[in-house]
Length: 383
Image (cartoon, rainbow, N blue to C red; front, side, top):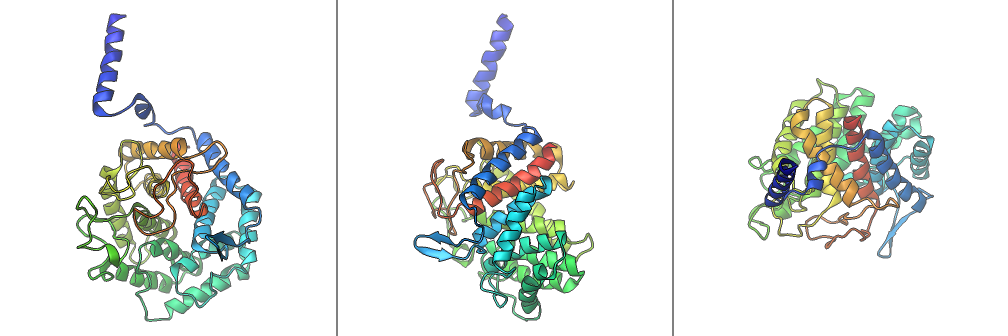
């Protein structure tokens, strides 16, 4: 009995000295896949009940936007990921209804070059693969064809654009078996990586991305580090994952995307906090260093996907995913399905701050999309 008491005291002492709670130690394991799915469905049900008409415009601060804007499109990315593991007709019909109410067109129609406006095409094309009706393909294809047939390649001057548009190009390449989509995708991506902002938006030493030209050196965070916004880097990681998952093994420039993916993962792992989250400013915990869902969810999605596809070693990276998912599910998800600690729209750590468990961001949809993307891969890992 004395030995048992001594051992318990020793464990508690080590945990306190190292800053790790016993709860934190227990959270190094993922819950069962059914519990993960239940968390995803709870959050999704909350949103679908709040937005029964998917075609209804989104009004924020007195401005009404069509519901095929990028924030809502990211939600539908997550919904389609949920549908792939839990094929309920309510999910499928909700997505089809949304697309139909926008005539399967990108926001601002087929002449737009803006990646945010094209993001809805990801779901249109996913739905086309399920049911190959021509109207599901034609609008977004016309839009992307316009870019493929143009010499312009400087469109993606902010890193969010990679997630919004790259998967659309990749999906069209896979559907049509036409490498022109892959080549144009690479040209625009490569310009973002190596040219925008002077020498590109990707730091080839620290292997993270500046959000846009406003944050390249000499810009610094309050602690003197480079400003690497968590969600911005999460968008890039998600883009790479979606492209790698979609394109064939011998697809053009696949090695480049895979190499950048691996470099980013190696850079991100040491930056994960003890509570499972990543800071909104990845290298400056003093600049709004609270909990934040979207960046952490996108990293969780990217890392879990790598394990599931045998790119990352499960023994090494499983604890990272477990700690992150438990932080998202336990600290952000409300009993009614609302998600807390979602940073509002913006481009840097200070935007939408301060965050909170009960604070509703300006748009609720994309945070849920990120959560569902993460959950879909964590579910596969747990199962």
